[in-house]
Length: 327
Picture: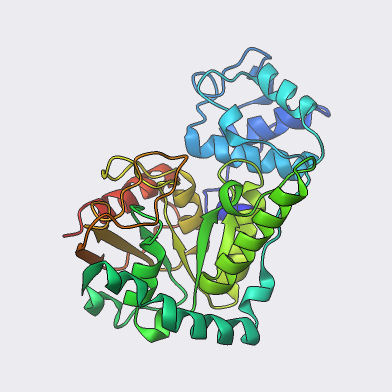
């Protein structure tokens, strides 16, 4: 994915190399500046002009170059070149504490998933009446495609997938890796079993896959590319978390990178009304029991074609507004 992202950008003029300091070389090429102008105190934002999208790309490049696990949140508006070197020096070689579930795309898993969904797709009808609009926007949709939606409840996935026409239900859904899939050395066997159990059944039922919200960004992007190459649609919640206010949050910058790299149609989706039925008022406690019966609407917008030469930050804003403006 990173190579595709870089290939989609205008070719930069050659930047003189630093004589062995790979971190300076990567920064110079990313910022498109002479490596000789970079000092230990150079700020990534104010001096090198690296916005949030470029900082995500820097994390990906460093992870690939040094085989490290780096949390992108460690790089912010105050980070300097010396800070980057300290972060790289302090990190351990990358160890993935979760798997990407390729088994979930086998014919046997797909048969079981279809049988399970026949029952689970009826659950929303127990506490809501659903209306679906915008299906005409999907009639000529070229697949695979990326569906992007606001995140209002644990039940969002059920509502969206069951609202899709049958031909588009070959879909994989991104889920926060740290919440559903990840376990680390030192965790108790009970924690390991709980993570494995929840991850297995969620993957079998809805074809979930781990999407990193910090480290392992490159691995997650590569897996999405593998899904697309295999003809699978992808559903992503670009806010990165469920709303606790009922209001749609800002989209994370990674959606601009992903959609630009994939170069497939992007379909905005909006869920309205579900938050009032199953609200999550505390991020540490997920709510499953509805508090009342209500009406829910699922709205599909017109597919968006992403300009491969557009700024990823601008793409993120376009995607966010497309979902926010659906009525």
